[in-house]
Image (tube, rainbow, N blue to C red; front, side):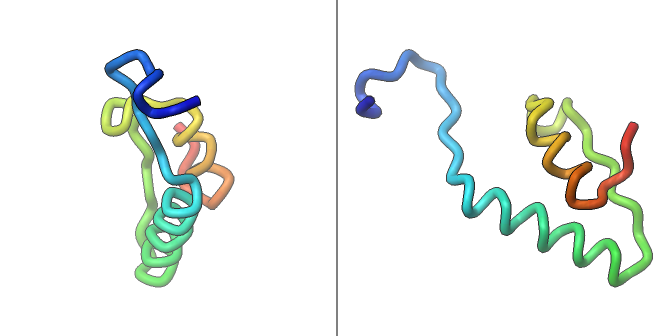
Length: 60
């Protein structure tokens, strides 16, 4: 599928960048003794919450 064929609005996510960002952010929280509480209201994606939880974020 080409980008021009997508119905809009559409969210396009680079999964490699997303994985890196989730792991890096969790690493920083762990290193500094902080808890990461993912919020669906922030990024509007249950799947991203699941990815964050799998990386160690607090499950709500």
